[in-house]
Every structure is written in C-alpha cells, then in structure tokens.
Length: 246
Image (tube, rainbow, N blue to C red; front, side):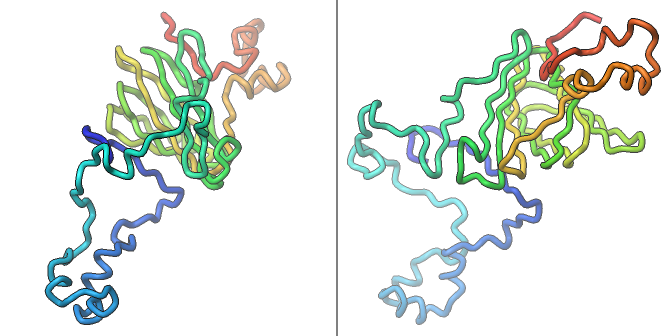
C-alpha cells in the first residue's frame, strides 16, 4: 500500500487447488533455517539474525511513502504514459458495453491483456431489477465477487437440478463450466460484480442468442408452443434485461 488510505484488492487464481499453506514465503524460509547458515548467507551477525522475523511475515507494516520515496517519482506526461503495460490493464479506462436501462459490462481477456493467457475477467453492473439473462460458458468456470448491492442467482446442473442463492456485498459465487445460470439485481441500488474465468478466452452462449439462431420450427417443437407464441421469444441477443412489470 503506497497511499494514505486502505488498499483493497482481490486475488483470483485459475486453479481451485490453491493453498495459502503451500505458498512460498521468504521470511518463513529464512526463519526456518539454522541461524548460523542464515548469518553466513546474508552476511549478518547471529544477533542481527535473531532480530529478523521468526515466522512468515504475511502482512508487514512499512514506512508510508512520502515525496522522497522512490514510489513517489514523478510520472511522465499523460501523452507519454502507456496505460497498458506487461502486468497492468486499466479496466476502468475501457469504454464499457452499455445496455440501456439494464447495466454495463467491462471485459478483459488475453486479447486485451496478452499475459493473462489462462484467465479473463469482467466487471458487471446491473440496475435495480435488471437481469443478466440466462446463459452458460462452454469453456470456463465462473467465479464471482459481489462488490455492492444484492442479487439472486440460480445455477442449472442438469437433470432438473437447480441451486438458487441470494448474494450481498462481500459474497462469492461460483458456476461450473457449462452450467446454465442468470444473475438478477434484487435490491434497490446498483449491483456491481467482479467476475473471473479460468480461461483467457471469453465465451458465452446467451439464451436469447441461442433461441434466435435456431429455426423457429425447432424451437416451437421443443417448447410445444401454440400458434403465435414464438413471436414473443427474443429475436436477437439481449444480454441484460431491464426491469419489467409482470
């Protein structure tokens, strides 16, 4: 943290087997070695080694940077700044995909951020009552962190198995690859969700797009529709449905 306020960040891993217990910590490593070996390796005295951390330093309090700190070096002029660098992508500088009355989406994949070859991410904002339509991802699991607002999500796991959950800010949601689901804002404020996928390529099959892309007689046959009912179905991709009075 280099500022004067609390820094809040979220870590997402593309492997569900991640274990903090098996994360390599250099302070844990050094404190576990014989003191005389550490002293010889680092060029310290045994007294100086004894003053080092004696366990993993998970969060360490440092000096707050000031104008003399190397982290406070003047940045180049705005015209010289490369917003996208090897390990940084400014998602909020991206022009979002805006759905009138429903919300917006910002998306970053390996196309925009080449180093992220095994992960992609999205920030989704839903207006009150808006619905991220029923859809599924054929190539990735979905991990969600609810930043603000309230939401409902149902996940379809085949053979009539559906799980429905309610979410508040700070909750985490999960959808397995290929499982159908939706997200609906059930509150009276904007629902903001950070979404991660364990694939660098974003793929989504939305129900509206799937229905609109199939011959009408196939859809009518599958759903057993009466005459004229097919005309009520979506004829193009919807993505987010605004709140409607039923």
